[in-house]
Image (cartoon, rainbow, N blue to C red; front, top):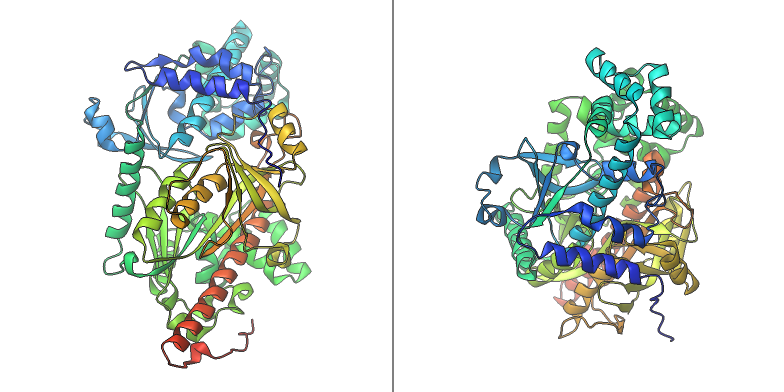
Length: 595
């Protein structure tokens, strides 16, 4: 097999990375402004108008969604792994700083209430994500600052701020013209900034953004220490459930899809959810519900209930949330937030406690009740980490669990040959972190996912590339990969495969090699669904969202993963019973449980 490791188009990316890592070594904060030129030289696919005086609204939306609201007031950003890093640097009150959140990026961040933001990172990938995001945000802020120096525009903002925080139609039109954007783009910014829309524009008009950045700790030892703390916190929440003695099916997905499929809570709460849709929600949800009911499609209805459930739990009060928590506890689902380090929640699911009659009908048919009842295995599901954090976390898991029975990865990616919502199943992954090309047997194929998709397509036998950051891509870079047949672009698969290599081979993963992972003694499955089509110029994740359409591939891939786990566990329990010389109900062939 020819080795294809594209290099063309990456020189500016590598220069940019070397620049900010050299600056981060400084013991004193440096100005983000220093990175503006090297950032622009990348010509990132996510920052198409970086050199234009015209604002790039898609980039501003994208970065605003991945930074907390307090970024408007922030002048200094501090980077560290654990609280001790901040305390040793003189920020002894870090535990008292307010937790702040970004809608589009799950990362622990705390704000001192004035001008300083503390960011907890799990790996180098967090830096490769955070620094370009801050730089792009500041570039676009300062473009708008220049444009908003028009006196009429500033007066309109000041009047709206004093009045009620809302712009009149005339004021909105005036500001759109002044900012060189159209009304639709103004509305997008209004949606992202919400009630602070006018306040943010007023702040932009009043001063340039000059963010300072400093890394307090960032050694490999610090990252490993942080993941060790993560594991210790996870195990401490499990009482007598010792993962070091259990077979473990490791899943990287999210914190809702597996739980929804296993608890059946949304279906039991269907009447309340439907009443909520009719009485409290926007008309679009009610219309979607009517369309699904008229089509008499149960699987679509189940997906729709899962989609609405989060909104329902948020708005419906404590009683519904308590009921769900009680149901999860009853069937052995343990939720474990990470309170003292980076923000990666985990779920531990005991297969022996699951109720088959509660399972989603699409997975119930492969869930042999006797095999599950006798099982000692658990599912360890983590809220998918970013980039190289995947390597660090899976390494901790493989070191600490009794037996690794399978590794299943569900995540978002960009597609170079499909549409948003399509599912891609790679068999080859080139990892830009290690420069390795991993060959492996993906336990999933198109027929494992396609029956559960309603709107999208499954593309298996694909080639994936794990990139270093969302901004660290440009059209030339991606076109070279596309010419070599790589169509699936994301940030975690290569890192997970590096950890799998080390769980399989008696040495650390190599660099710049073809790494053969055939023969790994446990299941490996990777499923990606497309949330971006970067070859469409200017169309990035800031231009829209998956919304309800994202539910289709999310649950199709989650169902495929659970079906695979149940099938593997039924087979394992049957083999275990026969090896022990005991022919039990679990070992006998079983008729599928009908939906």
